[in-house]
Every structure is written in C-alpha cells, then in structure tokens.
Length: 165
Image 1 (cartoon, rainbow, N blue to C red):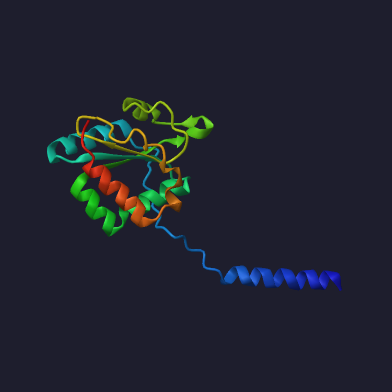
Image 2: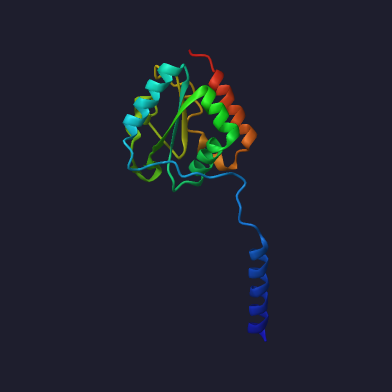
C-alpha cells in the first residue's frame, strides 16, 4: 500500500515536471572557440576598431558556462547586433575554467590590466588604443544569465559612450 502510494505520488510529480517548459529566459550561443588563436583574434579586432573608430568589446568566457552562453546569446539578437555593429568590434575569447586553475588565454586579460578573473564571463570595453574603460565592472558579468535584456543593453549602450580618461 505504501509503495503503491509512493509510486503514484512519484508519477504525479514526474507528470507535473513534464508540463513545465524547459526554456530559459535568455537566448544562448556557444561562440567561445577553445581552438582559436585568441591573441590574433584580439589584435584583428583592434585593427578593425582603429579603422572604424569603434571600441573593442572583448567577451571572455566559455561554452561550459551558462552566463557566458547567455551573454553571447543576447549579443547575437537583432537588437544587440545593431548596437554592436554601430559601436563595437566584438571578439570572443575562450578562457577555459579560470576559477579552478584551468584557465587559458588569461594573458589577454592581463594585457589590459586584469590580473584576476574570478569567474566567467568577463566583459572588457576598450578603446582602439587598448585603454580599458570599464575596469571596475569588467569581471562583474558572472550573473549575465540573470540580468534582464534591458539592463544588459543599457550597460552596453552606456559603455559605448563612456568618455576616454
């Protein structure tokens, strides 16, 4: 009797779970390429930025990280693509899992004055000359999946207009 009741309760629980949609509140993209020559990609973004008068948006993350995938997903939407096409040269850099000591391409972060990457993703906004404009917020994007579309957009739009020190 008890086993039958438990089995029935379990069946109801599983049925209820099956009815809950498994969609996330944000788009996701897997744009971090571990096999890429990240330093060459970054240098190419700076060359494009110098020629176009834009800033470099350096997105450092990993495909294993839901926050990194969420940020990359937002950047791929038409709304964000319009903003980045106007203001930024975007480059994605796979950084492995720096929180566990298994990071890669961390020399790129150090190149721009970030000695520590406590989590992923990190988002660096740089001038075409390599000046980091958001040192205070570059590593604060570890919660990108829980940020709203409008909040992320507002931050990127403001960073596009940040005066050069």
